[in-house]
Every structure is written in C-alpha cells, then in structure tokens.
Amino acid sequence: MAERFKRKEFSALIILVPLAAFVALVFIVLSFARGRAIPKSSFETPLLAKPQADPTVEQNGEYYLFCGESDESATIIAFDGASSDSVKRAFAVSTSLDTLRLDYRFVDITESDVDWDNCETLFLCFPDLDRFSTQQFHAFITWLETGDFFWCAGFETSDRFRILYRLLGITSCKADDYEVCQSFLFEDDILPGLEGVQLFNEDMSDTFLPISLQEECEVHIIDADTGVPILWTFRGEKNIATVFNSSMFYEKNIMNGLLNHAVAKHRDITVWPIINSLLIYIDDFPAPQPEGFDERLKEQFGYNTQSFFMNVWWPDMKKVANKYGLLYTGVFVETYNDNMVPPFEKGVAGSLLRYYSSELISEGGEIALHGYNHQSLIPEGFPNTDGYAGWPSQQNMYLACCDLVDYVHDLLPEVSFSSYVPPSNYLSKEGYDALTSAVPKLRVISGLYYDYEDGTSYNGNFQENPDGIIDVPRISSGYSPSQFDVLRLYSSLFDLGVFSHFIHPDDVLDIERGALLGWTQLYTDFGDLLDNVVNSYPQIRTMTATAGGGAVQRAQRVVPVFAKTKVDDASSMVSIDLDGFIDVAWLGVCLGEEIVSVEGGEAFRIGDDYWWVRADQPQVRLIVREV
Image 1: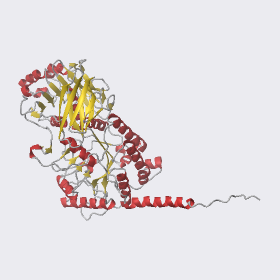
Image 2: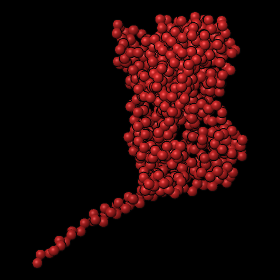
Image 3: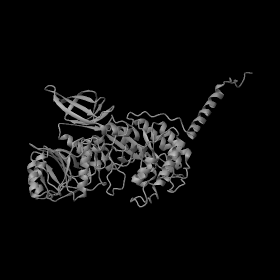
C-alpha cells in the first residue's frame, strides 16, 4: 500500500529563518529602548564661526553686514510718526530694502521735510496727502512727474489726491466711496506659485477705493468680486509708480515679497542674496503624548491616541518626508508639568520619547530644545496672553534648562543640541541668558517672523546677531494653513527664498487647528501645500534648523556688486561679484531678459522675470538676451 503522506525532508532553514527574524525583532526593540547608533548629519551649510563684534555695523540693536539706513541715500521712506500703522509700514519697507541690499533713509514728515532734490526713489507709507505742508505737496507733485514712486498705504481721498491720481495710472475714482474687499485674485506671477490663485474670502476684511486704470498699467492683484485693481505698476512717459490700493500690507511678512518684486520691476536688473531653505518644524515633538481615546480618531482608525500617532500619524509623516526629502526639526519637551521650582522631576515617558527621538534622527532630522516643560522662559509679571505665571527666578530657569539637556543626553548620548524654539513664542532677556548659559552650544533660535504690537513675543528677521545666535524664525503653520499664512509663505519665498513652516502632532486633536477635517484631509492638504511649493521652487533645499542657521549666515554675509555691459546687438553680460562669499551663495535675480548661459554657477527660472542663481565662486557671469 502506497504511503498516504509523503515524509517531509528536514531543513535547518525551518528553524534558522524564524530564529533570525526573532533575533532581528529583539534587536530592533532593544535599539529603540536603548537608543540607536545615530548617523552623523552632513549639512550643505554647516555653521560658520561667530562674528567678531564691530560697533560700526550695529544699528538700533540689530546686526547687519549690508546696507541699511544711510543719511546720504537717494531712496527715501517717508512716514507719519504720529501713526503707528505708518511706522509699521515704514519698518516693513526697510526690511524689504535690507533684503535687496539697497540703502535708504527715513523721513518722518511730522519732524522734517523731504529733500526732493536728493530723492530718486520714494516710498510713501501714509495714506493722507494732507499730512504734507502746502509747499511740500507742490514739490511732491513736481517730483512725481519724473519720479520712481511706491505708494504703500492705500488712499484717503481728498482734493490733493484728485490732483495727482493720473500720475499713478488712475483714470477715474469714486471719491470717498470705499468698498469692502474680502478676496484677492493674483493676476500674474508677482509671487510665483500664486498666479491665478484666489485668497481669503471670509478670512479677511479690508477696504479699497473703486478706481479705473489706464491700459498701460500692469495689474498684479485685483479684488476677486469686483475686478477692481488692488496692486499695480504704472509706467508713464517719464515716471514709474507701484500702488497698493489696500491698507492691509503693513506686516513685513505680507508686504515684502510683493514689494521686492515691484522694486525689481522698476529696475533694469536686481540681484540679492537668498537663503534657499525649506524648513519643517514639528512643535511639541518628541514630547509626552496624551493617553486615552479621541472619539474621531477611534471611529476612523480604531486606535487610542498614542497608538494612532505611532501607527498612522508618524508613518504618514515619514512618507511625506521621503517624497519631498524633508528633514524635520523636532521640538523636544520633557514634561508638561507646570513646576518652576526645583527639584525638577524627570519626565516619565522615557521609552516613548526615546523611540520618536531615535526615529527622527534616523530620518536625518534634528532635535531642537523646547523646554523642560512648556512654561515660557519669562519672569513673574512678564506680560503675555497665554496665562503663563512666569518663573520666580532666573536661576530656576537655568536649572530647568540644565535638567532638560541632561534628560535628552541620557536618551540620545551622541546628539548635541544647537537650536531652540520658545514655548508659545515668549522669551525674556532673563530667559535668553539662562538658556544660553545652560546650553553653551546653542546657535539657533526659531521664534516667529510675525509683527506683534505688544512687543513681548520673540520675533525676529532671518539674521545672525552680534553674540553669534542666529534667528531662523518660523513663518507659517498648520497642515491646512490659513489664507494669511499662504500669503506670508509665498511672500517670504520670493523675498528670502525661505519656506519655514511648523505643525503640531496634536493639530488633529484640536478643533481650532483643523481636527474636524480629520487626519486624512489634513494629511492631503499638507501634501498639496508641499507640492505647490516644490513645483514653484524646485531648487529649494530641505534642511533642519541648524543647517538653516548656516544658510542664513551665508546669505547675510554676501553683498552682490553687479553691472551689465553690452556683448553684441542681441546679448549682454551681467557681471556679479560677491563680497563676503564663503563656499556657495544663492541669489535672486530679476531681469526682463533670458539667461542663456552662466559662468561660475547655474541659473534656474522661477517666474517670467525671476531666476534663482547658485554661485559656486565669488564671480558669476550671466549672458542674457532680450526675450
């Protein structure tokens, strides 16, 4: 009788394969528990040595290695010192001109007159022409007939306005008949990436003056509902003017990209250093995560909160990182207690924090410090709108920062820390000193790029300060950013070559930050945002906060000197010499011609008249031809 069952041949693989898999699994688990071997990050833009203090380049507490304010400049920023809005607009204009490496001088019309004989370019930062004296107004009209002019503050109609509006390209206007604007439509690529895009709707309410323009005007933005021009450039027979028919462009991070491109349109060629960085911060990560369930996440994914973050959120974030080459900067918090008096107890979520920290570093990211807890480093009585009581002493701040550093070193002994994000964006002078004493290797602080009237928030420009600390602020936020943030981020992409964005893991839990949309929609929106940015600026470099600091240093220290000479009937050469060149420099270049060849670098078209140029040496030569 034949055997019913064939005898199986014994093989060592039957035992060895599962055993090997088990050993590998144990190794992985232990590596997360004990901390992985951390690969050393290789940055294209390593930090440079701290600057040598030079009192000749310190102005109003800010550190510049470029033009800034000059008493001899023929570029004048005229403002009304009695109006806070006018002062803010003047500051926004000055930061824009700083970026372009153009000098300027301020004139407060409440204190002095404009020297029209020595004025080539005027930025008017107030809406009411009646603020001029009669003599000054008549001199202004005469100057405007041949002047290079920017009206940056909207209009207040008056007899004086009606006298001169034709010199701005306006053919008619309805006196005092202001209308409400709730939506902008971008007519051209004044901000690459936004051409044809409509922004706002119900998020914004502004006023504009219904006007009609001459056909020669180049319209950049219109009111989406009425078609009335909001921003345009007019080239008259002898003068040129760019006009903002809106009062909302007073923040530097909204105005500057628009203004920089407008300034470039007034000039034959404009060249300025850009930072070229795409930065993504994950605030409050790694940090202790809430336990329990979120009903929306439980219904959609079937996980408790911590399991959702581990099994859905973090894998999705890694997919996004792999698709776009992102290098996350995680903002580390040890504990969420509110203790501000020693002894400072160690955080209790060590294994979870170690897991995410190791994951973040293994993906090429960076750990930035956020705090022992989420209590901002401010003293008692420090004004804030977030309910922080403040620390009882600077010594306590210092000890808490030391505890944080010790705790993270225990988790990741091979990692050093050079960047910091202030909780809720508050950081006092006392806190700054305590922080830098506790973390001597600290070089980068990432506050916000916004302007706040209260003056208590930690805000800054992208710049290196005299003490060597580099401000690398965050500009926009959220998986589904607000319409204002979209305008801010595209303005800064043009102005500075920077996309600096932050998100929170718990946005998916917070109704005010998009929880009702659900994680699937938030994840989709985040991908769409990155798609648009990368498609508009395909040469943008992804990096972490510390590398971003190195990029800021290189951009700040470079001053381009450029000239254009004729080569033949069809071609010209643009010679760019870079004072302060280190190893690589990125430049924004605006010109109305085609770049056909580059010596000393490479050129990349961004918009119709806008290019990014990578300089590999301190002299770059562009051959250009008329389009």
